[in-house]
Image 1 (cartoon, one colour):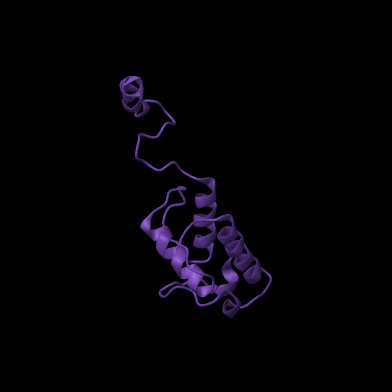
Image 2 (image 1 turned 135 degrees about the horizontal axis):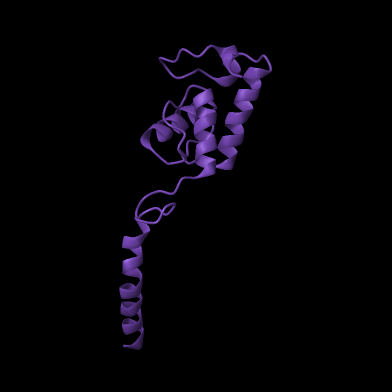
Length: 122
């Protein structure tokens, strides 16, 4: 019984904080994603490779999921569709291959409808 009453007290004490979090700059309301630097860097890298066209805001979104799956397929790695340091490194290596004069074939096929020339990545 003591455990239940302390849990109830904790809920009563913490519930006002959830409402306040919406009004405090820099705090995300409950249930919303918090931007991630890893996700943002991956979005930027995949944008350079013409896989991702959305905003580099560091948030998970359906466009990022599609870009990750297409990139993983083209790089012939197991599709996880999760932003990981290993996928970020792989995308940066793909950019480096293009910068060093590699061909688009080294990168794998670019997504359909892209107009990015192979040597245009800076």
